[in-house]
Length: 122
Image 1 (cartoon, rainbow, N blue to C red):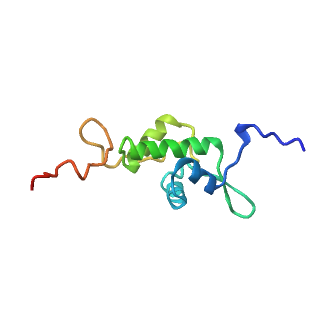
Image 2 (cartoon, one colour):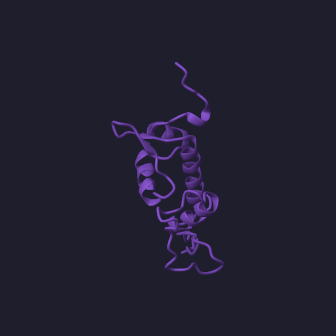
Image 3 (cartoon, helix red, strand yellow):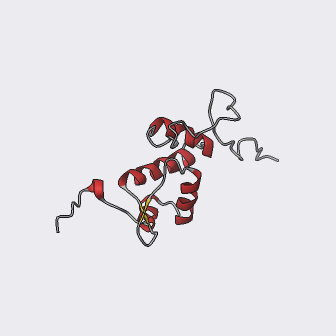
């Protein structure tokens, strides 16, 4: 067998990606729909997902943007366009991301903290 087992050709299952990243399998499937222009794992003949190492890095990036930087889905999509410009192209060559509601206050798409305005003394 002359199969190249280098890390670039390594394919991972959804279970393996979930274990490596700490992201639930249901969340990975949801992200495939939410960020379909970026995260689109290959499928086997039996329709199982096969993630590349680049897909794994992308999942880690999405997780970091959502959890650490507190970006919304739209904010993540815009950031991914900057980080992975070759992924965010539609088949016609244009960008699919539409900015219908421009962000206020400096152009960030950050989620509002639910704890920010609470007064613990009340």
